[in-house]
Structure formats: C-alpha cells, structure tokens
Length: 218
Image (tube, rainbow, N blue to C red; front, side, top):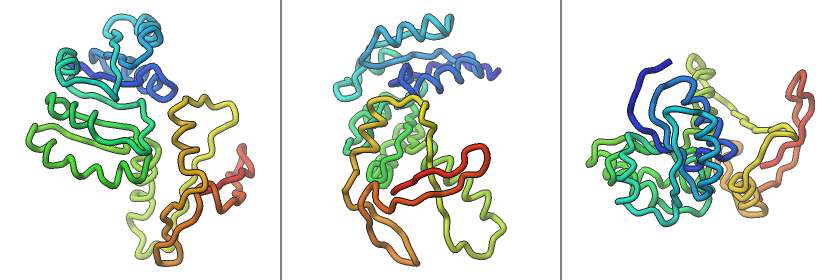
C-alpha cells in the first residue's frame, strides 16, 4: 500500500468508471478520498462501503465555485464524470486556481486537443493538469509507444475498444459515444487527413480467443 495522507477528490467517483478508480485507490493507498457528485446518496453509500478514509461531498461540475472546492482542501481532483464532448474548461480552471492537481478521463478529441490552453495557468499555480488519462488516448498511446519503440517505420496503427455486452454503462458514456453519430470525424488514412461519419466504416475484426469476431465502427 502507498502511504499518502493527502486528499483526492473524485468527481463522479461513485459512477461506472469513477467507482472503479475510487475502489482501486482505497485498496492501494491510504489517501483521504472524497467521493463527489450530484447524487450525494450514491456517494455516501460508496463511502460507507469503503470505510475509514473515504467521505462524500455534493459537487456539481457545471456550477462549482472555487470557494466550495477549496473548502475540501484537495491535493488532486480527478474528473470521472464527463461527458467531455462539447464541454468547456471551466471546472478544470477552478481546480487549478484552487491549487490542486487536475486529471480527467476524457476521450473527447476536441476537448483533449485544446487542453494545452491551460498549460500556462497550471504552471503559474505549480500544479499538473492532465487530460485524457483513460483507455484512449493515454493507455492506447502508451501501448503504441512501447510496441513501436524499436521499429524503423510504422505503416498503420489500429486501436479499437469493444466492451462486453454485460459491461456497465453510465449516462455520460452513452451520451459521449452517441454524440458524434453521423458527424464528420477527422481520420488519418493512407498518409493524409480525411474524414468519415461517426459510427461509419462498419467492419468485423477477429479479436482472438476467447472473444472471437466483433463488429466495429468509427
């Protein structure tokens, strides 16, 4: 176990993805975990389950004030809530200005591409601001970097996510993946940028045993 008495606020920490991170942190560290969100009952339930070192707090990312966040005295804030498609950076700014490190699980292309605009603010406050610490782009990029480290050239990289039919899904996830259906999505193919409709380019891939063949789309 990692010994650390600093406080970590997990916004959406009782949600589908957030609860996994919250439970992992509870097992692997002794940090003070603050499970935050709009559903205080859900947050309190998980806090009771985790026991000492975890507590719940009411927090709405769309209306959070710097003073209410600072009152929690966070060392770091992790935004697990989303959806990040079409969102601005007001919550991230509030976290940084409160003097806390910021991380999110965003997989929204536009949100991640423009996140660098907060770099100067984060440096001025002496904190880290990290976007996209999720399956994509963070973990997928790390895997690609490791696999291609000794290669001279890379012709193509295909990354796909194919959750099981029984995998839990939160409202934010559903909104995110349906938010770009039919919309133009930038795509690098055959050495140049183009575009294709979201949820287009339907294909099947063999994922190997025991998964087998799966339908995939953009």
